[in-house]
Image 1: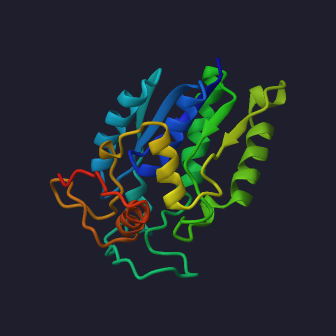
Image 2: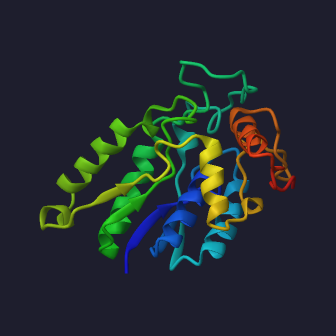
Length: 223
């Protein structure tokens, strides 16, 4: 059986990756992070998504990225309202987050002897984050095969990025084709205390626009 460690946030992109890989016959080991993010409701959603995907195991690791800060998601910095496309890296970028997450996923993959790590990055609707680019994924994959016992002994680690060239609309379409229920997911960077989406941040608006382009209502729960 094909096997992969899936980085699972509880958001739309990572859930879609899980749905695609499940449809392709992968056995999934889901990994989520409680890293001090202001949108911790995503961890509850990640558990629900993991259950829906029927993963073999789901781990939630605790990290304190608030101790580093530097992001509107991990520091006392306001989450801005969506202002359209920009060439600037937004304040919702979390310094080195995907590097850290992929490194820990690599560690678990090596313990499990699983050659694949899956992540829901996209180079189209990615909000300008540098650690969502194909160049970054290629560099990390090279590092994975240089820095591990399994890699040195012949295992070829692969970072799976099935969404890398998709727009958000194409991502939603792909997940729906797999029969995935997006009502299980959350995308908001600045939810209320009860988990309701703000409807104003980049992530909310990009998600909303994707469903609208498909002529569908967004099934996201409001609490």
